[in-house]
Length: 191
Image (cartoon, rainbow, N blue to C red; front, top):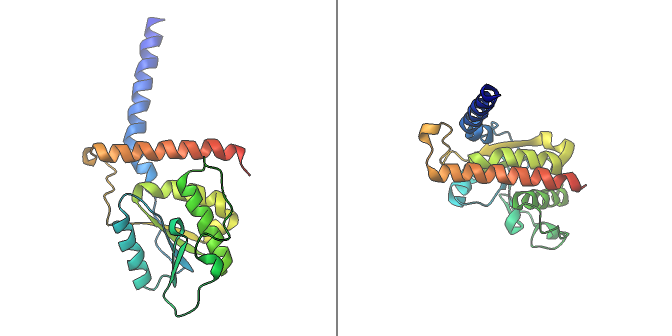
């Protein structure tokens, strides 16, 4: 009995170590950007780095529109009038308070894209944020999610090796896993 207990503790510690080692790497996800209808920019701690990547994508002609769902804002590179429902808060239904912020941003982005007749988009955020965005986008956009690409900003720190990570990086990683778990839990109860 004593040996089984020692073996179980050893296996638990080993699995915890392996999970901790791979935790940051699992969160970092990236696609090569492809020409799309819009670039969707997510708010976050280092919004400047995210804006810089979105600007680069627009400058390199990957898209005509920049959508910032948290602000319900569309910026066009063309001289065309905006669709009224694509600006301001009009036309958006209220969602339950327990919805995770990124989930809300994606719901708003989809509504804005649908209003404007846009189908494809490049999602721009932090490297650690991309797996959660991809996960939620699959749920929000459904089949249309295959027309989405996910491009993390290269201007923000994304250490994926334990020796490169500091306390702040671990806080980001843990926060992402908590938010992923929360989304997975409440998404069981919504349509």
